[in-house]
Length: 60
Image (cartoon, rainbow, N blue to C red):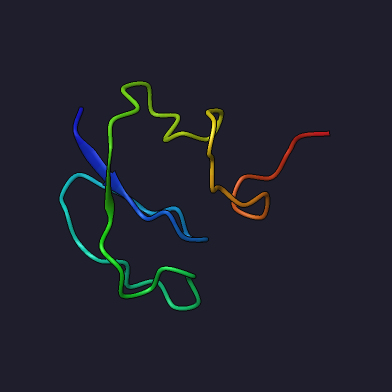
């Protein structure tokens, strides 16, 4: 399914293109990027991941 996401600290995912409006996000006011992950991982486990551990805490 085609979707878009914020590559900043909020990691917001949207079905439609848009801009990040999350207060405090490192990409606030920037356009979402098209995500073509196809498996809802949004690049979290792939090379070049920009996801912050604070957004996706590791299980211990």
